[in-house]
Length: 147
Image (cartoon, rainbow, N blue to C red; front, side, top):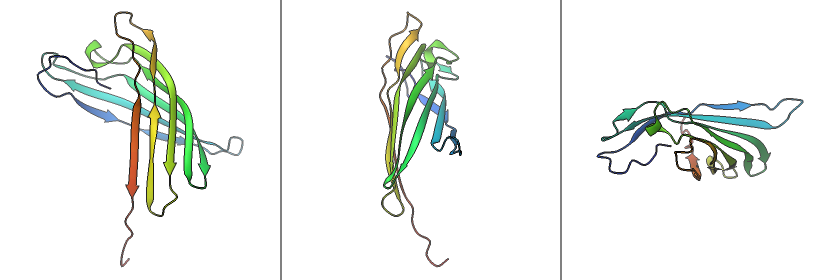
């Protein structure tokens, strides 16, 4: 999440690294846990002219299989790890995350992850944060012909 830069003379760009780590299921804990980290590297235009690491975002979902697909819930966390004050919110944030994936139609996967991290601590000189993040997904796999 790159902050809004009032009066900037260009477009904000962000390269993001987003590893996803599925854990389980295990015999003692038969639920799949899905952890996703987002490490942003924003580049802000003039007059700020800053580039570096932004705030680290993490969600951790417990995922449950259903006949129609999967759903899950867990925490969404944001850590103030920005390398410069212009590149992040400067606030610790936490809130709910919910995911839903529909796989009931052959070759189709559709769904979304919804997160709502809200600031609870951090620099008193920075604005409070309440972000609703919706990440949709849609995949249709074509069948191989003649293989």
